[in-house]
Length: 148
Length: 148
Image (tube, each protein chain N blue to C red):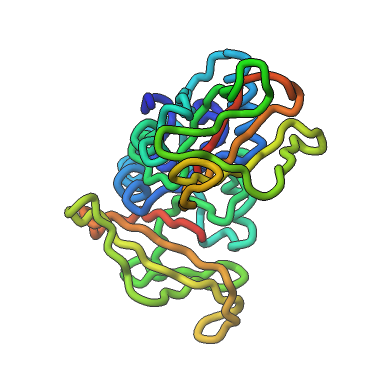
């Protein structure tokens, strides 16, 4: 990340609303972001433990990593999403959470857990992703994911 | 605070090292700070509960407020510091904590609690200040304080 612009003492701690309403919206629309702290990655070609280096923000001590990835289809004609990497797979957990800008619904947040191995087996890990999608474009392919 | 420069999602969560080594150093030296998020106040003329409005940073939900205040002497010739406001007074608690830039000592942090009323009496409150001073200028009059 360019260190331009952000003064000492500021940390990237975005709200869900900022992630969806500002960053994801611009990413999906291919709009320019002045200080692009959200890395583009291919989530199906990177393991969770390699995301830290890829998504480092200046000298921050991070526990969260932010990135943008396009959704991959399991089968070209289907709607099932392929969430596997080389070492494991991402599996949804819990309920999706609505993201609002004041009262307006602008997006949804899904939580996924990483399992090592191959579905339906695999060994659960502590890696969690919050996957945000725009609600206004429910069928748009691009998606952003934030690693917690 | 000018909203220039800081992109969405960034919050002011400075480390002690950043407060002392960057902000306090510049304040004491009357150097220009690009994005001056540290308000100048006269701590002896403002009550703790009035600091929130005075030290607001954009639209952040803050639990800490940051400001810079010159030290006031109780007696013109003495070294005792007058820490009283109209409604009460600030009283030191615990030990001062060293602030390092890597291995180099650059400052000290004192913790003070606000009491309503007049010393030596007064009613303790939940208001706490972390008062930072430069270690390189132990006799310099200016001081910065950060409200927690």
